[in-house]
Amino acid sequence: MDFIPYAKHLIDDDDIKEVVSVLKSDWITSGPKVEEFEYEVCRYLGAKYGVAVNSGTSALDIAVQALGLEEGDEIITTPFTFVATPNSIIYNRCRPVFADIKKDSFNIDPESVRRLITEKTRAILYVDYAGQPCDIAELKKIADEHDLFLIEDAAHALGAEYDNKKIGTFADITTFSFHPVKPITTGEGGMAVTNDASLHEKLKILRNHGIDKDGRERFGPDANWSYDMKLLGRNYRITDFQCALGLSQLKKLDEFIRKREKIAQKYNRELATDGVQLPKFHENTRSGWHLYAVLLPEDIDRDRFFNLMREKKIGANVHYIPCYKHSYYVRNNITGNCPVAEEVFSRIITLPLHQGLDDDETDYVISSFKKSLEEVR
Ligand SMILES: *Cc1c(COP(=O)(O)O)cnc(C)c1O
Image (cartoon, rainbow, N blue to C red):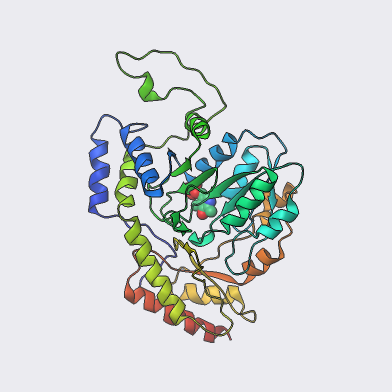
């Protein structure tokens, strides 16, 4: 058995054909394929506006910037995420305030959010961990009560559903990532989605240095040379050949999710053992199943278990180290007090789950999991 990674892209000949055809066309960046990708993602989500950028991190950065907050404003977020989430707050000179998570979903705990609200709180930035939607109704209620913005980091949750609606229109801005480990890929890439026309306008220009006209608007015999830089944006543009890959991948997204969902169901059936906390299928939601993460029994040494899995060539992983434990955060005194996140971190392990995982590999992961549990005890 070859090494089995925890996540992996699946690219076929159709995908490659689409990319090559764009490489032979006139527009290879900021062209028609970018718009088409934005349009199709929005159509899939039932959203109004999408701005495709060069990474999920860039999408988060412009999402926070588009809110127009002031230095020192606070944004409540989860520590149980990839560092890009709270980093986007710091890029914009605001302060990440870490709320604790819930032990059943590993998602931000609305009760903890409530306790952390101050005069300076302006927004809640929540993450749908593993593709499992947060308690969005409760977060919206808090946002309404305290007049806060909501940003949803849905890097894991493209195609996931809450109340029979796709994730993408619940928050003021929702962001996605198209990194190869994510639900669909463009190599690197991301998108910020909103139903608000003025936020859309800001997101669009922030992607392109804060300039009010893009390359296509300044091209051709009838175009004028003038433009204005309105905001301090950056170059977060994405290429047309990446968006061609994204368009082709998007057609397969529902099939990818069904495959991952089936594997997750099989894991749940086969791995049910005393003391192991398996992911739940929550009511009113459909997970995108980006990750399959379990809590090991309290008496199991997670790191020894991890090594036993890696020895069996299984790309087990740990998602995530609570962000405030990273040395940059410690050095800059950006702290958190999240006992649930810390306990979950000490016991959690991610098992391989992706659309390319076949039956043999799935069975091998299951038998290796059981064997490693026995070995560690
Ligand atoms: C992957 C990821 C990001 C960043 O996306 P990139 O496309 O890698 O920049 C942000 N947030 C979460 C939760 C992620 O998993």
